[in-house]
Length: 285
Image (spheres, rainbow, N blue to C red):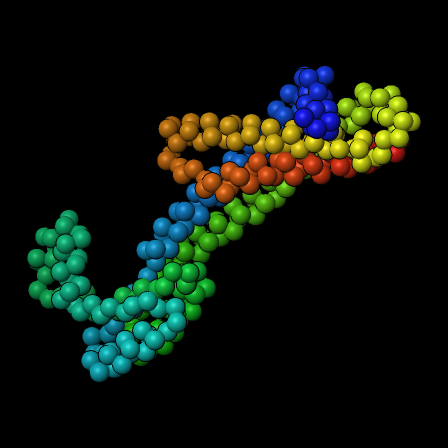
């Protein structure tokens, strides 16, 4: 085993309590990042499912000319964001209402006429269902004279996208804050290790050891500590995820690349914190 790697593992054996405390604190810090990641991912999944159901419904006046309707349908179909336009006649609308709203069967049967208007149901292409894109198409469709009203759920659509932006911003801000805490913990542990071995480091320098040779074991120690902290955070995050899924609400586990990202984040934090601590404190020895 190379000297640097052997010394990095020896550091854990020399001070297991300090190493365990560092890993635990890093794990708790990254746990918060993981929990916010689960929340952000599940919010995104809910939005994606709701986006799949987003469509624009344009209610048409009874006096609309069939030729004008056909021409408008072709024009709307040519819009880049539009996947399809379906014309629903008044009779079709009534049949759909009777099938989907059986509790109103008595009401529909008691009516002499058909109170439901004809409509265009406009479906959108994937990736074209943001609040701004939907609103722009709805405004364009509303310009036709024979269109009486356009509905696309603008109230809940705006709130959903606002919730996604807030969740994303909170994940980034809090994640960065707790990642900084984890880096400070690793840096403090490395500084303690350097002070504990300052006599050994001084002797190594006297016999000709370079700074890079002295620095390398501490950098590996920080990387290993960060990876272990990330793995511990993943275990805690998964346990919390299972508890929440089984008791409160059904959640989806994050993708594999997100899991790898937490481990990578731990190793990066460990490496950076170790590099800063070693460079600063080796100059004082």
